[in-house]
Image 1 (cartoon, rainbow, N blue to C red):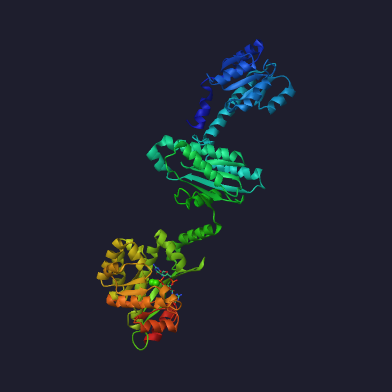
Image 2 (cartoon, rainbow, N blue to C red; image 1 turned 90 degrees about the vertical axis):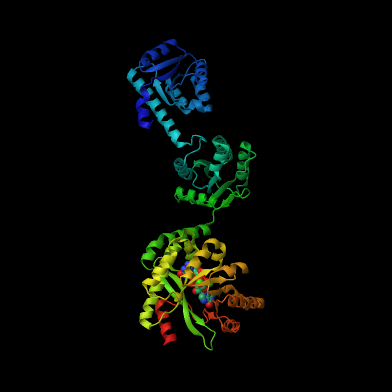
Length: 564
Ligand code: C2E
Ligand code: CA
Ligand code: CA
């Protein structure tokens, strides 16, 4: 029944009034005034009235209370204040004494009717209005509170948290999100009654904890609570008590929970945001039984926000061609003189909003959410188009290596798309090379190996990137489809410090030769590294020693310089 219907039907069922007075004549008058509109029960003393009310045999909607009786009306009001159930029933005091009115008001009386009784209609109207008011209040209470735990729902929690700030402006406060992990599973395995019992037990425990300090508790979703309270340095006791509350219900069940704490809440911040931060902090915890508390980390949060911004900006940035292909030349060093032989495509994001965003920042982010595939498709196509343009401009194909992400291989059309790009641009497939990291192979060999094999069988060249960092076994290496091994840059970096690394590099080069593959060393920065690699039989070298990654116009200059 919605609120409106409930209101309209309020007086269709006769409401029951309990009239309390030790003078029969007054009770009779009241009964005659109210008899048509209400059921009237009579009590000739405060004590009798309390007995009737507390027996709860009949629902009583309002009490009309005389003051001077053997058990004084004021005593009745005092008793009422200690019994929550009685506070849900409105009490109107009937008196002729103004001073007593004030006293009763302080004791919680809701309204007054003047004795002797005069205008019948006014009395009836007052009573009806008061009942209506109380009914509305209980409807409000129904939506304001979670029915199982009697805690505020999230909307009211936010509202009261706001009020809390106003009432205690100088108190430092924390926002906590507490969730019972895998709650659905608990409901499914042990039944809803156990699930409810756990929630109730935890809710009661939280109420007890919070009763010792200033704060309020809310409930959100089916399995979680919110607390907004005075700042605490640690919540170990709270965590311990929650564990106790859960154990009280079921000793045997292994139930974990997470407490996310956002301390020192900035009161100017929307409560929604503070709640979001505490929830996000709770989410950083795994379902570890022993690790229950996480504290909000400002720096980590800033990173997450920045990442969100990058992700949101991506679609438009791709359309606006904010992603630019850079080219890092590779040199074949097996002859007397190094010969410019190809280039690796490296992507740069030049954003009017964020400035220069390094691939180190966005590649792994875009791998997490799959955006990388869109970006790589753009790069694969662009690279083919440039090769076509250079063929027309310079009369030759400049071979390019393009990085494939571990995520790209899950794209159903990957092979078809690559073929389409080279065919549209009339490019020989062996000039179009794809780099994929060794770790991508190792992580997901069952899926990656067959796809890369397919690509290679279509005539494209495959390079294993960052080789030596992915820990593939020699046995596995024999099955990998590749033409080029690219030595992980870490080896080149550490060879100066650790002579043993040079032996490992030599081993990789020999291994590569055994597999009939070419070896590339990248990250080569100085002459010493270059000479060692050349003398060890490394075929191709890439690195700042020869050239940094170049923008399109610089790279075109380089092509002309090197080839003509
Ligand atoms: P990577 O494929 O291993 O690329 C080599 C990285 O080493 C590049 O960093 C390059 O600029 C850098 N580098 C080259 N020579 C030197 C040197 O002599 N010294 C030093 N210290 N560094 C050198 P970059 O461009 O920042 O790219 C980082 C990573 O981002 C790449 O590592 C690759 O994993 C990824 N990436 C770049 N472009 C793409 C792309 O188009 N698609 C995908 N999926 N990933 C890409
Ligand atoms: Ca690469
Ligand atoms: Ca690499």
